[in-house]
Length: 494
Image 1 (tube, rainbow, N blue to C red):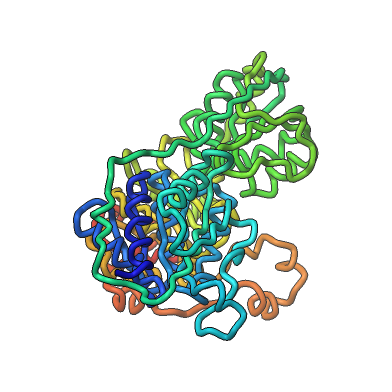
Image 2: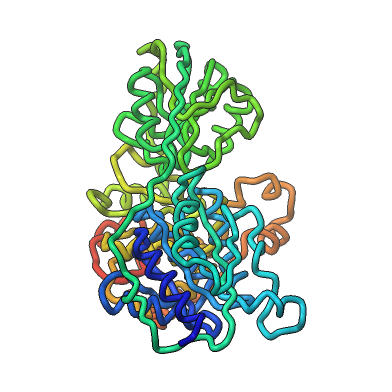
């Protein structure tokens, strides 16, 4: 019997015991004991196991599943560059407070710095982006290691986020026994910390509520109780009926009259909102997953829960009524928004389209997601697939460059049947940069070369090569295509 297999079998079974039900594997030799153990539980129907070729794509797919499940998922990699390829997803998970457990296989510590194949310094490779790096060998107590990893990931002590368990496997790397099934026990969920400190805040007549990523219903409840205009980003979880639609346009008119701001979540989507916060006193309700917001060092107070004292004036709220933006992009995002309901999930990529949605979509109770931890375009296709693995219909609104950045995520191998629509606003480049200063400073050819990244990829050929349905349409005809099932790539010309 292999010590490596004994530890892996006990450890994977312990993770399952503590509630981890979704495992992701990018195959490799050093991690073979973990792979065998996970497969044993998957064949018994105790966990879901997804095998992916690309660790970078796998990291974001796991992130999507963890976003949907709100509980840690486990990722298994071999040693070397395989570990480093998780870094983009780990950074997003760190800043957005997404619980993930990274099981990184390693060689024994005595081989570090000695030229051993596929060996680098893996413990600490993610620096402060993980809640902890637990560096162990097969002599460690696997149950205690598993429990500690889950506790840190769910936020039993602080904010949720990724945890690395770096396991030093010595040869022989695997064996047929024991089975992970031999160590399965009764499930035991780990709960996150519930620290609740309240702060009473006196509401002025000309205050507003700003809801950024991760704000949730706390922002809309506060705005309703305080009778204040609610400026809620599309992925805030607070863009409900009664929130202001095109508050960006109204800020140009009314921002000078705003006397105070109550901030929920992480508002980083628009310059107009950031300008308001730069010049106005604000109070912050600390988000449960994201870092506390205080970019301008002007926060007058922080609390787990803000309690409003008083209300704004009805006239003030009435002055914020606004008309949604009208444009081809606005038509695109509005039609996808309107088609989404119930348990459907909607994912926004970090492109121009989420900013258009901020100015165009009406308040509606939806399950909306976006990678706003670092707001990168990385891994958005893979994130959509992870969200869909819970059995929900997923629609992702992305730009063409966002699609191409994660083209390998289109790989359907081993995924079974999912319902995923990738709605691609295709303007053949990065339109988002046209709003920034350099668009006016540079000659057009230089601007296109350095920033817009023009592309002429045949998206139909790309979709077909991975087995996705392909549809070419326009914003005006988009609603006819939004109820197709399966893997669907909708190429919407802009």
